[in-house]
Length: 119
Length: 112
Image (cartoon, rainbow over all chains, first blue to last red; front, top):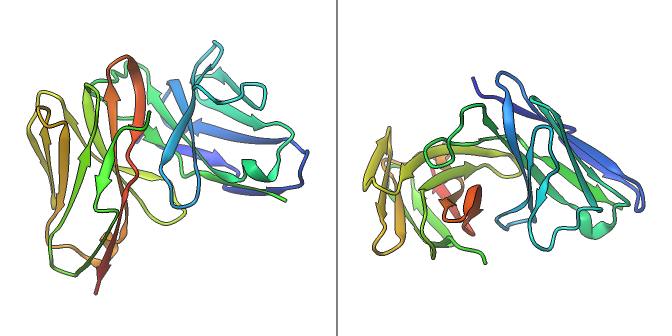
C-alpha cells in the first residue's frame, strides 16, 4: 500500500516551453502533497506544500508564477514549470500524506521522481 | 536555513562490515527520518524516530536519536552490495508542520 506515482519519469523540452508533472497517490487519498527539487548530487529542497482544494504554500525563494501547483483532487497534484529554462533542469520529487496523517508520527510517501532537462 | 548535516559525505566499505552515518540538526523537531535513494531514483523511507524515542530498530537498521546533542545516527549492520545508495536524514518539526528538511546525505558504497 501507500504507492505514489509520478508522470512522466523523465522529460526533455525546449527552452520557453511549459512542462506539467503529475503526482498521484494510487491507493490512498492524499490531503497534503509536497513538491521537492533535487540538483545532481545534492539534497532535496522543499518547493511547496499543496493541500487539496486550496492554494499551495511556497517556500521562500520559489517563484509561484514559475512553478504552478494544482491539487484538484485527493489523488492528484500537478506541478507545471512555466517557460522552462536550462536552469530549471532538475529532478522533481513529490510526496504525499494521507487522510488522518499526523506529521509528528507518520511518514510521507515519495514518488519516484521526474527528471526534467531543458535544452 | 538548511538543517541536517550528515557525515561522512561518502563512505566506502566491504560487504559484511557495518556502516554508520551521522546526522546533526539545529532546531527542535517532532521526528527524524532516514531515507535511502538509489542513483536517479526516488526516496525509500527507512525509519522514523520520534523526538521522545532514543533508539529504534528495523531489520539490519538501527537508528539512535540524541535530542540533547541534536544528532542521530543510522547503523546498517552486515552490509550488502545492494545497500549501496545515498542516505538522507530529514527532520520534521518546530514551526514547519509536516515539512521535511533534508540533510546533505551520505553516499554509501559497499564493495562485494
